[in-house]
Image (cartoon, rainbow, N blue to C red):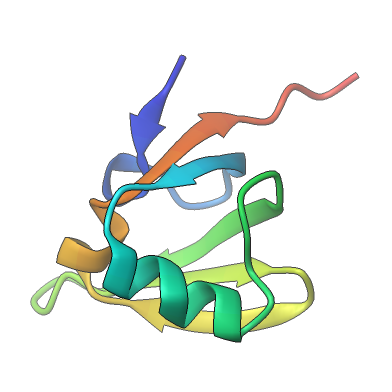
Length: 78
């Protein structure tokens, strides 16, 4: 089930399908984060809407509006 990252729950692992905004995509690519990468949502802040994720060994915080451009799919555990 595809969704945007801003809807992701803490503790869930996802696969990045695409990034729908060129500015956000270029920032993520500069950090080594690309489509096909696995990420997990570590925490969310209440007031500012920031989302803390871990992807490719990197921990970063994204604004909620930036996360809304990242299309993800929950990673199936096999």
